[in-house]
Image 1 (spheres, rainbow, N blue to C red):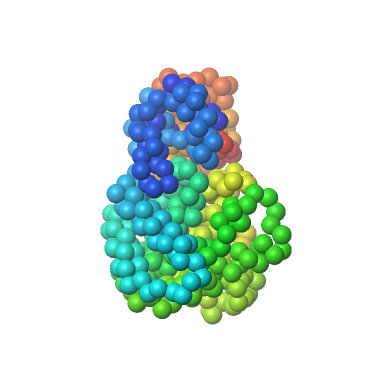
Image 2: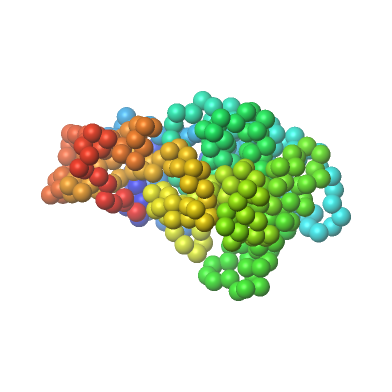
Length: 360
Ligand SMILES: [Fe+2]
């Protein structure tokens, strides 16, 4: 299968992977044939890329780091719990012993799935509808953070705390007007100040919950803090920021940049990675951004790329030891001739050849 921008889709193409709605329920099945109408609808739902079946790349299989069942369960619990916090609003707080238990069991599923994929580079191309961005984003940030914790040798207990902190890092947004969170265009100063309240609101919601580790509440509190003290809400610096909150900050920024929002298109993985690196030193720690880079697929499997030679091809394999230099299966020559029998170039071996453009 290959990954192509929705704008390059034409009727008759068939989906290589299912597309899920906000609850993790299948919206369109694998093998579904695209029609003009469907393409328009997907575009309207905020889907930028789709996997399609293609005879030249039939053997390229893209596996998700977590199973469909785990995804569905996580999204439906996030939705249920967040909605109940939205309804509760500022009324006297109810204790929710069930909250920690629920997300503890969700995290167990996520950790079990990810431990089977430790060698795979993560790619969470946003193939889902954005109308429920908060839930999808919370799940993605948790997947990235847990993977980073695993790469750092964290114990299972540490992964649970980090993962729960990541799943619930934005729970304070349930106390803020949704229209404001998705507002297209520039926010006024007052509106931005209102949004900046969500870390502290989240901390307050979580800190006394019986089954939520206190550090997870601090993840909500500190995920917008930055190394040099330029973050919010307290402007704390360096070692005063908990290590877990630093991982979550990186995962959060990256996922936000690579997600389609009502007011802008998604950045590609390598562009978002460049942006993260430009924040090294003052916002993020170099060692942490490096671990992140080494575990995220900059050029996702199946993506169509152009090489400096002018040849065009599809990312066919990624070697975790050289993730920035994948194997590219050439499907079009520099003269624009489409090949019926493609050949491959391993960029890890041919060091003078590199990717200059990604289809978008
Ligand atoms: Fe946030």
